[in-house]
Picture: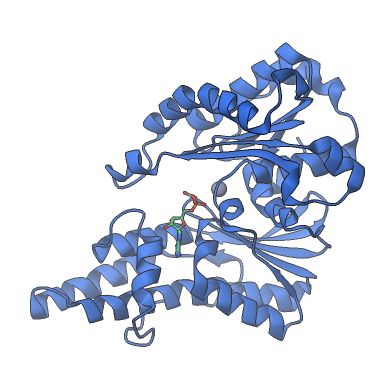
Length: 355
Ligand code: KG4
Ligand code: ZN
């Protein structure tokens, strides 16, 4: 059994995965996941309108040992059945990463088992394989969450090229900050998408950041434009009515989705991938899914969106990636004597995963 842990941000996530069967059969299916725990801290951080790093690491520290016991119970296994431990080493909030990493290192050293420190975004991408299909290279991945916005080309196994990343806010932040301006709470991405369903996406024209650049996203200009428009509307009529909020939400969503999909489409045309993967919390957005799916169909590219719980931060994606690493690199027990030296990498680049 493989124990996978992710504590990179505000979710304490653990998965127990039947790596032996995964390696033996080469077929990935959901029943290889023996236990999957995702403990969200969102209620705690909502009080502050964003993730408070110190509070997040304290919560991980408090909860991880308890959740580990719960994971063992759910999987109906004993500590001694665990043969591999995989953990997110970066990128993420340093204090948060350290909690998971130290737990995993101590566990691996005490039990003398294989230790696999892995990259969080690489994990997000490999979540696609949990859907049962091994990736074919080249593959294109759009990673969009509250913390990341990145378009990545997978040239071969663990060989990445970053096609575009954000210069300022992440796409999820753009949703959340706009939702906040509209008074829709935190994190407001989902609420904004709900309001957008009843709105007119052409009612307001919001800027599409860096529309001409194919190697970068930018969402900070959108936030300013939304803020100005809301102020202008408030000045006119004191309070904005519900139908106008819906129109604003639809127009904001349209601007964000256009920015994401237009650059992804350019990359599809240029690199001709077999698959296009959409992951991260913003992958929950139906308008984004539909728009990107349409482009993929037009270009004859296979479109993959993992199940929702594998799109947001989770440990099953870490288990999936670690399984592939073991499969490709064979036994890695000889690295055990170096476990103590493995530190966190809060700003780890995906182009440098094999360190
Ligand atoms: O991956 P994730 O759960 O965690 C972080 O990176 O923090 O992503 C959360 C982000 C938030 O910004 C949230 O507002 C956004 O995903 N999100 C959405 C939707 N559901 C979640 N954004 C747009 N539309 C949605 N339906
Ligand atoms: Zn993430």
